[in-house]
Length: 111
Length: 117
Picture 1 (cartoon, rainbow over the protein chains, first blue to last red):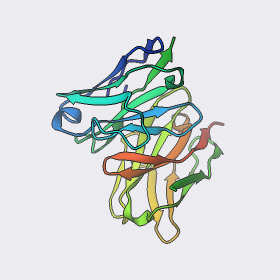
Picture 2: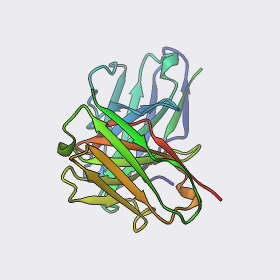
Picture 3: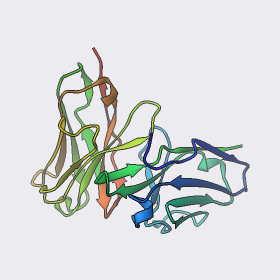
Picture 4: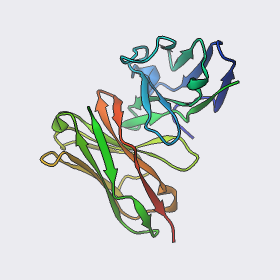
């Protein structure tokens, strides 16, 4: 299983708000390493959505926001749109593994 | 515009070797650490290996340590992953990714490696 834990799936109706959690431990998120989020449509390259816990690259709508607290982080998507249906991954660094780690991914379904 | 183009994937027998490459353009290649990330069929993203911009420092996931070797040729703007002793569970799309600090700001489309007899 993945070092960072995400729910396998979340869903919401258009216009609603959904959150995706990412739970780590004291060797990654809890020790201060930042969390980053990627949006991935199958068959395409992952897109950086949030970096440094809560920063959006240029071009990413402000409907996407990130936060971090303790050993966990969250991605929130407001005003859900059909085009948001994709897989979402959190990512951080783990000092006990001396390597980069991903969450298992969360499939977002827009109802 | 950053471009990352992988090549070298294919079908290989268990226990065999394979080298995949990533040709980079649109940025000063030697200034950035680079990683390989893979995605097995139906699975999530998995970090494989990272190399520093000057090639001095390398890092590996436990699942590939001792079998895979990451390297780069900064004169050719190319990243490599030499994979030996391949196993069925190494079957995946292998993508190169450009670092910005501890995250990835650009990815290639990937090259499929299939380990099967």
